[in-house]
Image (cartoon, rainbow, N blue to C red):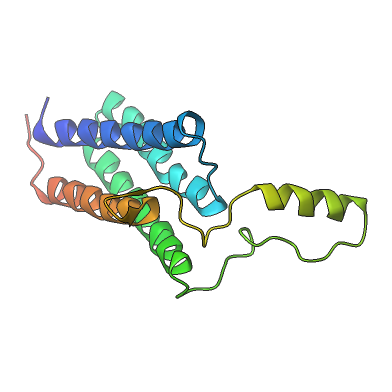
Length: 157
């Protein structure tokens, strides 16, 4: 297995670990994710699924390109999340709790929204850093690893 394939496999493992950690925090520790937290999981799922296909078909460079794009997306989502947590950005509509309702369906929506966490309230912190901030750093590091691997010349033979 070439170094690009090993790197892609390691990126897939890192994304699978990030997804496993998110599910453990949600189900094992009981922290419900906000809508931005749930959205930030999707790029990791893309890396795992499309990375597996890229490895299967030996499209390593395409897999690394997809990884860079997915991690850039994860970085952007986390950057917005950190901005919302710190009050630098407004709360996205998907995170806001409806203030008024006009019918039974609106009441049900308002009641359900009140049980979901909002994106401006950080969940658990490790070493004083929120999960969104850790994810921001992780997405940046993983995208740089993928970019370095992609910048190496493809080996022939």
